[in-house]
Image (tube, rainbow, N blue to C red; front, side, top):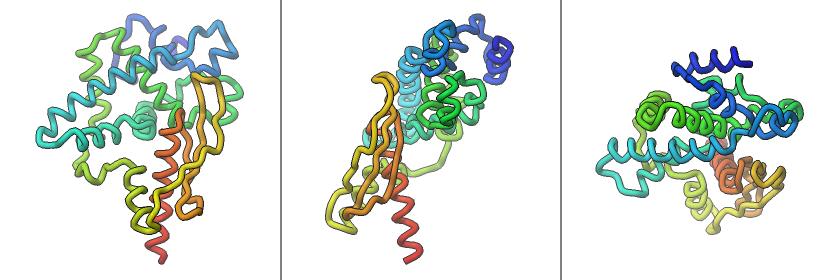
Length: 234
């Protein structure tokens, strides 16, 4: 396993002196529960990495878009640090290939879940910060997030899916969408939520996430796609 972690460090173009930190960033709670000898799960590093990513991306957007207000900057940041977006970045970095999952979680396809991949990315960022400090971590993050940061997209088109769906629902039906919790499973530190969204009493989308807000966002995104297709077909 140490050779795999060294391979990942080389793939990330980082020379870790303590590969155990990077390894811990890839230990999912399901693996830690099945194999206590594997050490603690990556949740503490994920907590730290979440803060580091937030600061770096916020600072960069603040500098790049001096004429935009808080709302526009918040929308841009959400488009980059959402679970879906960070999972996409994790996929570009091939983090899923190195993630350590329990047997049950592997069989259930947990390694493909956006929330799991996003958590691994944040944990890796936390490990990089502890190993190299803020300056190098900042530059590394800006490099790996360059496609998202460089996207020439108007802030208005990045409006949160729930906000877009609410506007569309009012225009179509005169009422706000209704989000209904389908399930919430797992321990408190690793919950998995499933939500569906209804418009005019009809289920238009389903979403999953590590908290209810993420699940609702994914449900709204799916509903927007469904409603757009309805308009095209209609």
